[in-house]
Image (cartoon, rainbow, N blue to C red; front, side, top):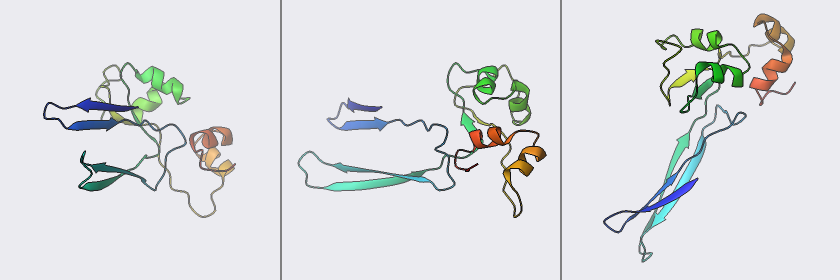
Length: 136
């Protein structure tokens, strides 16, 4: 979604909105750059910034409840509530609150999917569905 708005002083403002989808998580930030110039093309500047999409985190969208999020992540609402100790109530989660969707685990030498599935009381299929960057 790209929007353009004319400001009262004759300048133009551009806004860009991006919502990452599952599978775009990464330990390496995305680099986003924009180049701007004046209408007469006398000068131009580039501005770059980085966006890090972390694993096991989610930004609550307007209208979502802990139950709808749990269903989307294939878990129970109680799991989401207990992995987010800063939530005061499961019934009152404000939009744009960042929540944890699970436990972030760093793989150690000797770990393999079947062992991890057993350790975390889940299945290999479930692990690979929430970790699309991991090959089964």
